Length: 247
Ligand SMILES: O=C[C@H](O)COP(=O)(O)O
Image 1 (cartoon, rainbow, N blue to C red):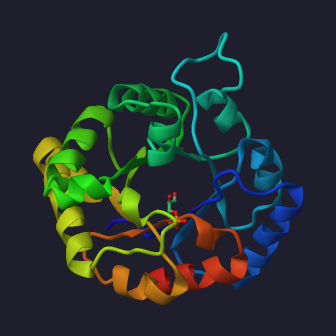
Image 2: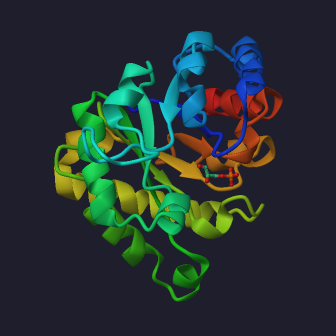
C-alpha cells in the first residue's frame, strides 16, 4: 500500500517567525498514517526540525556534488545533517530560474539518495506543451531523464505539477489529472516492474486548495499533494491534510 503524503513547499517565503505555523499545523493534524512534510527555505531547516511535531521537514533543492566550491549551494549531506528527511528536486521554478536539465536533476537524485534522503521529483508540462498535445510526451521524457534506475518507494516520490497550474488558480480537470497520473504509474511499472512501480507515491501539485483537494484525491493514482501557496498558513494547509486522510 502506498503512503498518503501532504507536502508543503514554502518556496522563498518565511523567516523564523513563520515557524509558529508548524506548531499551529501540528495541533490541527488529523492523526493516522498520512505523512505531512513541510519544505521551508534552507535557513529554516534546522529550527524547523527542532520545532516540528509529527511533521517531516524537507529541503527545496540540493547540489549534486558532495562538497566543494559551489557558493550559495547546499549539499544533500548538509540537508540530511539538518535532520530533514526529504528534498524537492527538479521543481519547474528551479528548471526555469537555474536552467536545471533532466541530467542535472538525475545527478541530484543520486546525491539525495546517497545522503539517505527521500527525493520529491517534480515533473510538469508548460501551457504551450499542453496546447500542442505534447503533455505525456514531455512528462515521459522528464521522468526517463531525471529518475535514476535505483528509484523505489523508500527513496522517491514523484510530483506532477503542470507549470500553468502553479500559483495561477488554474487547476486541470480531474480527467486531465487522472490521465497524467495513470500514465506515470504505467511508466513506473513498465520500467521497474509491478511491485516497485506501484509502490512509488505520486503527488499532484498546482493550485491545490482546501476547496479542490477532496476532488483531486479521488483519483486512484493521486497519493497526495505538493502544495505551494496554501501550505504557508496552517489554517489553509490543515484542511488539505484532512481531505487526504479522509480519501
Ligand atoms: O511546489 C509547489 C507547487 O509549485 C504548487 O504551488 P501552488 O500550490 O502555489 O500552485
